[in-house]
Length: 399
Ligand SMILES: Nc1ncnc2c1ncn2[C@@H]1O[C@H](COP(=O)(O)OP(=O)(O)OP(=O)(O)O)[C@@H](O)[C@H]1O
Ligand SMILES: [Mg+2]
Image (cartoon, rainbow, N blue to C red):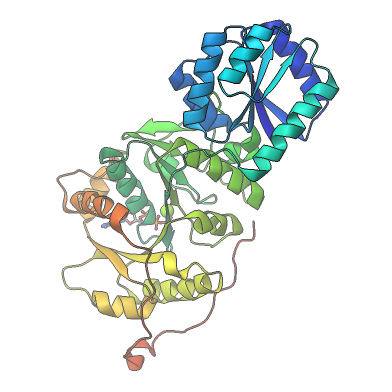
């Protein structure tokens, strides 16, 4: 499918062309008609939202047309531009060619000439797709077991990222059956990730702000109400993540731990998978089981353990945890009942002067330099592992 937009201050020209493009649906999708030459920031937002392959750009104002071509080239190299104008004017044609435009259409925009122009550009697009800037920092927070503190860490590490170098952070609650972000932060937008998935092909800079809430310097997308009948297609997830990647620098996903298909899709896109564990036998046992399942789908090398609620005297050392789980421990967070409780009751992030608040800030600073989490060696102390039932969990909760 070819994604297109029209930029034309001439309404009549835009309407005529839009009608012709309708003949090519669904192979050609007209995503947006803009009746003005957009300012640089608006153009950037529109590109992030629509990610077009082809822009039909009016040259009625040759200088503004040429300026827009330059912006398009810098923001999305490889994006193809077709110049348009009301009438066939050799001067405009020359100006558009000077600006680097290869195809030019005018007059009635008949189906044959539009088809020819699109065919020519499609050949170029097959060789080189437009390149849009996309977030590389995609982080999945996966609980080893329910209630180990995954949401607490995902939220507070995201907020710390937003305070730090990263200025566009999105935290998404992907725990579709018991997502807590909405309740914890008392988020009241009506819409949720479910609406984002349902409208994934029409997401843009007008719809998106209605789905998210901005808080703590970042954007949040909550999981909505419990809906066990929800079905999510892998293609919806891929399109949604692609939209998010174009619009943010860091994406953080708070997972359910059920390893649903859609969670695995997101994990496939993630740079790091942070498996949250407490230093207790049930949590570590399940972490080990999940780790061996993730190995079967080729995701084990992205896993790092976050040890949470670590008491002053822990039953297990970091080395033992690494041996048990089969993944490196990236960070240990203290058990700080008071700070966590205070944040929860006031629907806030952890106080930055608390021990665990500080730890979240410190860990967020470390993330850009974290190498993918190479799995640990085979355990030395087999006896120590005899406790643990080593099996491969089934894929739960098929979405
Ligand atoms: N480091 C910590 N110290 C003290 N309490 C904590 C800590 N981390 C989390 N908690 C508490 O543990 C409980 C579970 O936390 P949270 O909801 O973040 O876990 P979860 O893994 O996301 O759970 P769920 O399975 O419900 O998604 C909450 O009451 C939270 O306040
Ligand atoms: Mg949670």
